[in-house]
Image 1: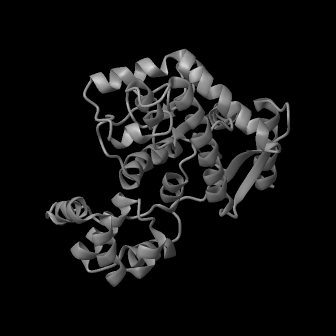
Image 2: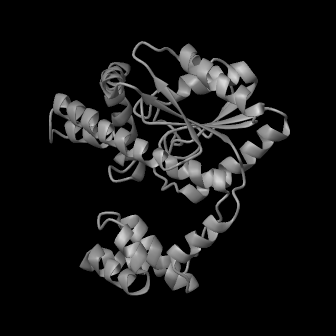
Length: 311
């Protein structure tokens, strides 16, 4: 049986429950692949698994960064790779579970990343964007790396600056760097699973219930505590769905009910984007949840696929 398994899928699809059940069944440990669950003190709004939900199964890559920090895919891979290798070296199964496709793909490929030098180039680009708008940086990028300039949305300030910085520091476009990286054989060869509901409305109903549950668990108090501790409203962590909307409510820019409705809508849109991302992966075994299916039924399907792959 493959000792490296990826469990992907949209938000609220049941990835955590399946990962725990699978770990119990085959002797595994879970490595979280969620770009928001990496933050400390952000538990409710990120749907971070509780001790009860973990059921004694070791979980890694949870609460490993401060909410004030800007985290990145490169840092995730630097931290998660030795954890995965250690799990495998101990003869256990590593179960990579989460909905952040960019992080999961990079971890499996074993991407090398262009350096983040401290030469002041990034600061200069950030100052240019602040003074003249991101279009000024995007215009420079179009001249040297039109492929990246076309691919990046004008609102994606962080990646536009990053792409231009890579060129200025290395003389190589980030497009060329990524192309070289993708030509290298992947570091790992996992068995891929992804969860999807046969009835999309079932997923949306779970998303709605999750938002209600987060409020009942004290999400507003969690956000108040983060702001009171000095976490800036504009921090990357606070731009997560479920935080930025309720920050507006706490400041009176909208009501709590309006914020909750926006979280539900944004979560649905995010789920669609996640499904689109994972459908590009031809190696994924899709585990489709029929109405009324519990984790046990999904687990049975996954175990059958794992068993058949050994034959």
